[in-house]
Image 1 (cartoon, helix red, strand yellow):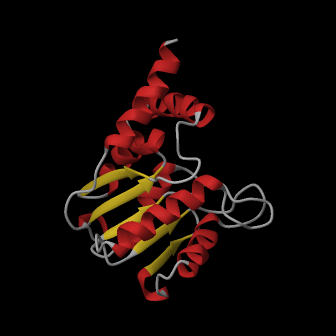
Image 2 (spheres, rainbow, N blue to C red):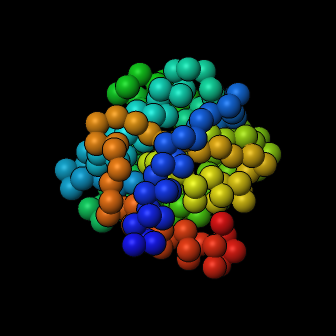
Length: 177
């Protein structure tokens, strides 16, 4: 029961997160890609959230992270293609194609963000992932905010939220978050 309540709490907290001010970059953590090379629903929501933030002028560049997934597609490349389809010019998109975890997303993204570790970044991810993502990105950047992506299918997703509780516990036990 505690695990369920924790998962629900992570999601509620993530949904309440807001962006404040201007950032050096918007970062999208990697997420699954479908076997046919299209973004999964979660990756599509993250990309659309990042594109929306970019259109609002919150940052001049969007950094897509994530390495090769289960079906042989590089998550960051698929996300970058989707950003361009949604109208972001190529010069406003950066690709980090090697990371495999949220911790790696944060540490590898440093090399693709203007001002590097001295940057202020906005992470766009799923609501249940906001808390851990913010903590991990703050270990790599001078400042990091994280907000939840929205859209179709964005309401609470139990299975990944339950996994996220375990991921947060592991990260905290290792001193990462």
